[in-house]
Length: 420
Image 1 (cartoon, rainbow, N blue to C red):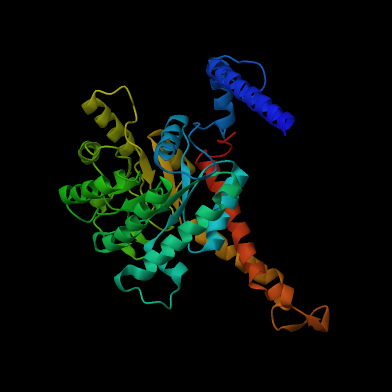
Image 2 (image 1 turned 120 degrees about the vertical axis):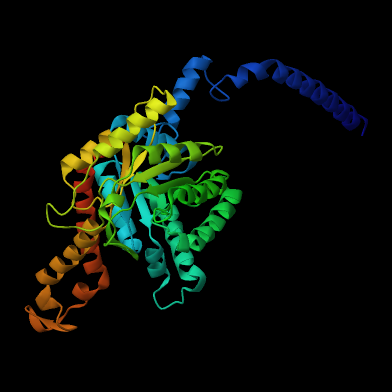
């Protein structure tokens, strides 16, 4: 027992002394460990380490370090759009109606090597929720748009490209739709430190300029608190798209004046943490029309930039970030001249709708004789046709055709191979 007690005391004392030495040693070594790459290995300079960290965290060689694969919001979104403006490319902004068109967008972006903007309209959101549902108080539009956004959130990173989650034209009467989406943004921000959506568009261009911008400014205050970017419209985009009908509007309203752009820039810039883009009209029309029926004047954007620069006394020749609505069917020359004026995104809807349908149509034409009944085809009267009429087959053909059309659009927008 005495031997046991003596050994226990010795071990105990030795253990205490050893712990004290280790504690002292750890205090002396701690500053060095703070600069070490790990628990083991040679010491490195702070400069070396910061360079390594930048290399490790930069997901895309040609984009700002803040931009990662997946949904881009806040500072990363602002960095991406500023980079697009400086580098001279525009991002395709594509209207979608379900997961097939959403996935086609991201598939195309992965192929052409650039970012993509997935755009939900109020009607598109309602369609995602289900057309049989009541849309009282915009409930189906709100639920469907959020559901689509959550789908993008779940899979976007897998495509390895930056994705902007955006909503399209919202007239004054439709503001409750945006209110519902902002409630979702605020809830998501509280839990995740970023909004669910990247940006929302308010289209109050039918209202007087002062009222348009006053309402936008009010919403900008709310948007800025959770890092949501505002897209606003000046002038009117002609034609018709998804419930917005401007087919009979006076043609003079299709062309925005530089003074209007500067007024809007001044007002919205007063909001702390404001991020915004401007859809200034320069003859844009939704839809595709015969040559000569649409007269685009991208010089309006160039003139507006020069006017704002002069008023601000700025060194930046392109202080405003513009977006291009009604881009389907536009000439490559007009598109690229607009990009030179600071256009960082072009909306595409009509052309991609046709491409999706054309893919489905071509599939039906190719397998027509296999799609006339569940049993029986040119290979035999008892041959099953299930693998041909499986909805995934024709829908996949639509996705592929839409993705291919978007790759062509990316070429026009100089958005190819802008990641690495």
